[in-house]
Image: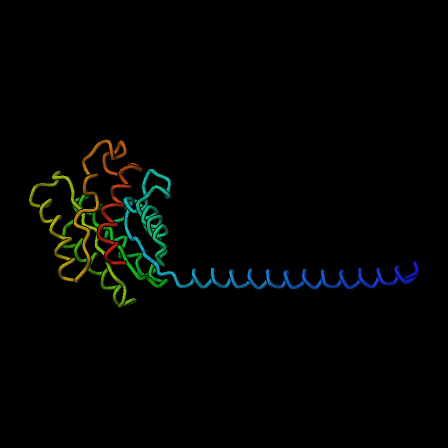
Length: 231
């Protein structure tokens, strides 16, 4: 084989090799694009199939005085994620909210579908001495609106207690309000949201009312003990 023949043969071989290399790269690129597209679709589908857990409450839910990531709804989301459960938590807590205020804004909040509705209101009513029948009426109205809009929604009622500042009679009637509402409406009840936290100075901010970050971790335990069975 002379030099010219060798050169021609080498050129043809290089051309074939280059063509094969380009073809492999194109196939690999196409495969990567398909994998990426499939992954994006899977992620989108996963996000769209997650159900909403709505925490509807006052400053306790909002995490007053703390970073939102330290409030108990965010801690519940962390537990859900660790267990790979298909739920997304929405924190709809507003500091200073009364049951009347909650009843006034519930329609706006219910614009999105809700799988689990956690109702945490009434504590500010008790601290302000609002007549218990008014609190009961507002909480019942909120429950009725949730069920009218989304009949399949599971409702969890967070029980609350208050200091005896307004007299023993008012305090006792207030504490009975939540079990009575839960029984009447067949709701899942968290007996006392602040169990183990309320009245413990080291677990509350200087105001003695709102939990610290450590306090919220205990509140999250109280909530999860009941919520886990609901999910």
